[in-house]
Image 1 (tube, chains in turn green, cyan):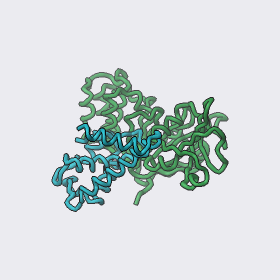
Image 2: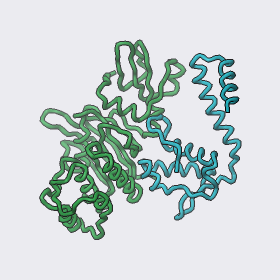
Image 3: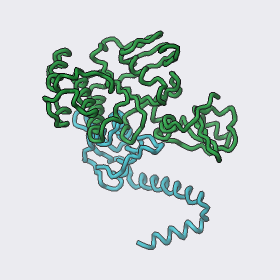
Amino acid sequence: MTENILEIENLRVKIGRKTILDDIGIQFEKNESVVIAGRNGSGKSTFLRCLANVIFPDRGSVVYNEGITKEKIGFISDQISLFENLTVEQGIRFHSSVFHVEDFDYTLINDLKFDLSQKIKNLSAGERTLYHLSLLLSQKPEILLIDEIIHTIDPYLREKFLEAVIELIDRCQTTVIMINHTFSEIEKIPERVLVMEKGQFILDEKCETLGEKIKSVVSEKETPEEIPYIFKRESSFQKEYFIYPFKEEFKKTFPYEYKELSLNDIIKAFVGGQYVKEGN
Amino acid sequence: MFRYNINFSSPVPIYQQIILAIKLEILSGRLKTGDQLPPIRELAKILKLNPNTVAKAYYNLEGEGFIESKRGSGNWVNYKNIKLDSLRKRMLEDEFRSFLESALSLGATKEDIKKLIEKDLSHD
């Protein structure tokens, strides 16, 4: 029923002696929305760049479904040059001629109410992002890669941005993969969450069932070895363990109070930097 | 539209929250058979949700017999075959049970709870 759009095998990227991505294997389905969270330097952006074919891996492969050509892969990052000296209008015309777009949709551009004759380099960070997004939307992308950009946009433009992405997901069955540092109140789009740590995915779950898979336990002593946890938070008076993967039978054998967590709690726990991951 | 807010910091999956919100709208009489529900894309945009999440909620509501989906024309409220009274009773029982749990965990006695309920009910 669900069809994979993208398969990644044994992906490895090294920069100098440092391993950035360490043997990653993962699949993405058509029309799913995925968020990648993780600390700074964990390899998220490098991973996304590999998917965008901007950098090439040292080993392994990134294979898109047949028929997904380069113009069907949209990549938004704040580090992309957008022909800075063109005006917005020239940029749109140039883009349309290169990608054979006949019916460029000005809705988003018009919503922004900015002057079409100003140069791209003079746009604000949020305006640039929306300008770039509307270029990409005209190609009806099958996959949209969003690199940590949402937090740079002001709340008004952020709404417009998210609405455009929602429209795209519904209209074109696009797969969306986004990186986010701050999982703020507004980003409710992802259905699957990946957490990256030291070049590997240490968590890969559907958002819907995440609450059943991760629980937290507060304990004064160490939890027994049989209970796997991915990280713990320590303070002077208690230890909090994040149990993953959680199994119902733990409740019988180890009568702790297992607390349910929301997606927000979990992401915050990972990226907040206040948690210590233990190699247990 | 919805009076019920979707609570993203809740561990309850979002599609279940939408289902509950629509059921509450129906129970309270604000949504009646024949009313149209907002299109999936519109509701997704308003609440900033994934359209698939909204679609899943509608699909489940249709399966439970609360709404009817007509191809090309949208989703309509239709709960003719649902006994609203028994649904209301069931939801009330659930709410009451969770209230009771928190009350008991506060150390309240059965007498305390009874008194409180009688006092509050006699007030209006």
